[in-house]
Each structure stands twice: as C-alpha cells, then as structure tokens.
Length: 123
Image 1: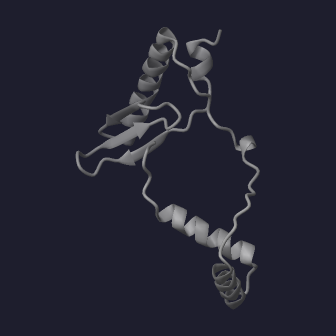
Image 2: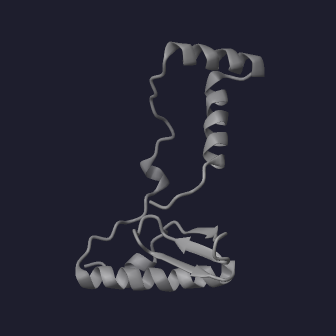
C-alpha cells in the first residue's frame, strides 16, 4: 500500500496565480481535484500548498479515494496528427513561406502564442 510520504514525494504540478479579486495568490495542484489554497505572498501560498496537499492526500487515503499520480513528460511524444480544411492548409503554407520558415515551425509558433495568451483555468 502506498503511503502519504510516497505521494508527497511525487512531482505534482503546482499552479500559483494572482488573485486579482481578493488579493494575494491562489495555489492548486491540477491533478488533485479540489486541492486549492491561498496566501498573501508567493512564499506563503507555496507553504500553504504543501500543507494543503498533505491534508488532501491524507483524507483521500483515509476515505479510500483513488489518488492520481502526476503525468510525466514520458507520456507525451511531442507529436500529434491534425486534419484541417484544405483552405486552412493553403493559408498556413502561404504564411509560413512569407515568414521564410517551415509550416511545422509556423504552426508551432501559432500554437505556442495562442496557448500562452489563454487564461489558465483549473479543471
């Protein structure tokens, strides 16, 4: 049986965002649904997050809930297949030629730019 120390040692992803409405910061572990805390400073919210994670994991173990393990980069190949309309394919090819880069590089640029601008919402 896996212990609290086992789960505490796993590299769960910690997200910290500024709480514009209330002030301070909010921290969450996206893989641990509902494991959320807050703090006045980044340092305080990071410390609170570790306490929150321990309490969340302890309760999950006591209640017999399934505890997800963190996703690893090894689960992602860095490749995926995408089917797009011919008109979009043509447009992307033309724009990448204008930029003097491959269509693959151009699409990576567009995806990265769009992803970086997207607000983060915890699942």
